[in-house]
Length: 394
Image (cartoon, rainbow, N blue to C red):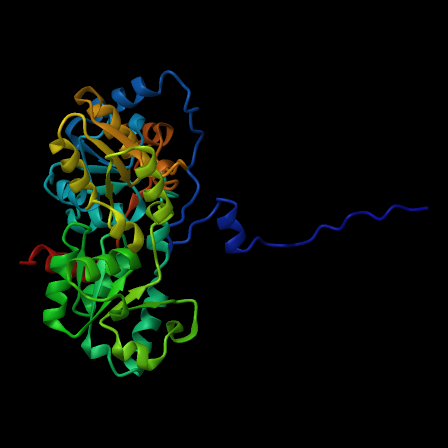
């Protein structure tokens, strides 16, 4: 009896397999790649001291940006904190900083690269820190959508408005087609401007922000809005539906804010009498309609700063920020709770942890540039045009 010997197969791993194994990058996606070298354990007691030492060695050469949704162990090293657009502008206002270390997600670092000078280098501590919402609209899908609008005979009437939470490619598409970027705090102004330019808006990539702004702030009806699904022929819409719509909403959403439900609101009101419900406009329409207050991350922070002592608040946004605000205002006897019973961090934002930040800072301190985010010149030019239109909004 003989035993068959295993044959050696000459099989080369596919790009998809390498991506899933974490050994390759997809440059058209917010998903990421490996982080070369061994990272120290998060429990390493020397991490904080190492981060401080590396940052001190770099001095004015480095400027660290920290998004509100970052974990506390990272945010403590940020020179400034804020939402995505505020941080990108802060980076542009520091032209002497050679390195911009962005503790956020991929599209935010892209925006910082677009707005900073060619001499500045933007670094994302973990290239796998992406955004599921931004991933929901690719350049190819949006180009196909525009073809659908063209075939329906309405493309010339449509003005694209893209949320800041989108890739550089989508921002460039927006700029190229006469549109503007918006944030959650200026979406109403952006839509008003867009309807002065055309009859319809293609809103990318967050359907909820687009719908909430159109209905809640501009007084439209839900029937004025249709949802374009990039995974269905013709977006899942008839030509008649496209022609009748005022708001063509991309089928995208935030994986964090999309978790909140009307049941969450009803439950917290039952548990905490007199509670104020304050939610982000990326939440579903029924949640926004049931809330007492609705606003951007900066709005949420300012509302709690101005709140009277003893007031009670249920906040519908990312848990890191809610927990930080609860601790901050505890001494003022403000009760601040997370809107939902289910714990929900932004998983991709939380990929920027202390080990990755230490690795990035120490690499830069040793003269090694790592994880640079660089937008190509053509994409940058059109994306910057869309951003400049936003800055010029009345």
